[in-house]
Structures are given as structure tokens and as C-alpha cells.
Amino acid sequence: MTVESDAPAIVVLGSVNMDLITTTARRPVPGETVLGNGFAMVPGGKGANQAIAARRAGGEVHFLGAVGDDVFAGELRAALTNAAVFTDRLRTVAGPSGIATIVVDDDGENSIIVVGGANTRMTELTEDDLAAIAAADILLCQLEIPVETIAAAARHARAHDTTVLVNPSPARPLPADLWTNIDVAVVNSGEAEQLGADLDTVAHVVVTRGAAGADYRGPDGARLSQPSPRVDVVDTTGAGDAFTGALAAAWHRGPEWALTWACAAGALATTRLGASSSIPAREEITAALAAE
Image: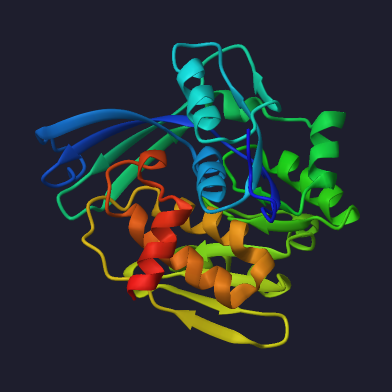
């Protein structure tokens, strides 16, 4: 597997799911049945999506996670491998793989239910897992696997000077020792409100604002705002993951460039259906920025 000589080494610790996507004119309200107009199964999960996004955006990516022993497992593993993500640390556990049911309406907005499956069994890190984290430039995590595992990985990363970038989504209370080991937090505006003062403990905070782009706050009071390129939106599923993975891949070039790079990646991801299937390649991001 070939990677660029200047590619940052990124370890992604997170979830991998099969996304079951239904498209419909409008999403149902409680108690209502509506007719759909399409269905697709697409490999996803915040961890896997961000791993693929980071790889396509220019990183060398190793994935730490778990699939089950069901019919989805082989396709989930293949999706990562085919995207040139290293999967030697992707384990197989008994039981079902994670799944997400996603409803997308004609405006490109979505509703999602995630069932963790094998992701909930990611409860410990092996010596080889820890060695991979220690050797990486960046550890990238989300919250679709047990928080205790993320906290242990972050502590180990901090002890070995590996930058810890966390997308605390789905947002929930986190232990104080995890917050103290996060170098970069990436949240959307709703998550920023929900997490509140906890984000004040993080040196670098990036807040995504959909079509409006993203904002950055640094440790020295520095602030940046980056607009998003204008695109024709088809499906917003996975746009945040495309943004976060691209941000991780570009972080070594500084927050300003990373924010610009990530906004372009996130915007491009909304122009296609699905999560992992919509993630843009490095060349597409470069072309989008050149056209601005």
C-alpha cells in the first residue's frame, strides 16, 4: 500500500457500521408512515468514515476497531482496505457488526439511528494497538465506541506526544481526564452548545456550521472563520466526517490551512449520496479550492 512521503501518520480509533439508507420526499413525524423512493447499503460509521476521509485527503491511516462475524463484516473490512486504510488492527468479534439506519429527505437533511453491535465490544487496547498510537502523529477518535477505551488511548497518546483530535459525537458527558488529554476538538454548533464549558479546557476547538463553513479558536485567543464552498447539496450524511478526516490530514500544516482544506472536503461530501461513498479525494479538494 503506497502513501505519500509527507503524509502524516494517523491512527483512527472508532466505529465501523453498515449504513442502511432510505431516501424519501420528507422524513416522517412520530406515528406517521411515508413512502420512500430509494434504498442503499453503504459502509459507514463515524470512525471508518473519518479514516477513509483522512486517507483520501492525504494521510497515512491505520484503523483500530471491530466488526462482527455477520454478513456485513467482510464488506465493511473491504471498504477500508479498498480505500487504502491499513486494517491490520481491525478485529473480528462474535455477534453482529454495527449498523445505522438513515432517512434522507429531498432537502438532503437526515435522521439517523445507530446500533453499536461490535463497536460496543471495543473495550480494551492491545500492546500492538498502543504501539500504533505511540508511533502516530495524530490519534483521531469519536464517541461511537466505549468512552473508557477512548480515554485510555488519549492518555497513551499524550504520554508519547501524539496529537489527540476528538470529534465528541454523539455528544455526551465525558470524564475530566479525557478532556485534559484532548488537543483538538471538532464539534458542530449544536454539540458546542451542549458541551459548553468543557470545550474551554481544550487548546484548539473547531466548530462546524454546515453551509456557513467553520470557526476556530486557538490557545492564544486566535480566531479564524472559514466559509464553505458553494455546492448543490444532495445528502448531508457524512459531511462532518469528511470535514474531520480532512482536518486531521492537514493539521500538520497549521489550523488556517487545515480549516480551509476541511471545509472544502465537507462541502464536496454533500454533493453525493451516502457517507463513505461521498468522501472526496485529495485531487477533488485541491480542484475545489483552486476554483474558489
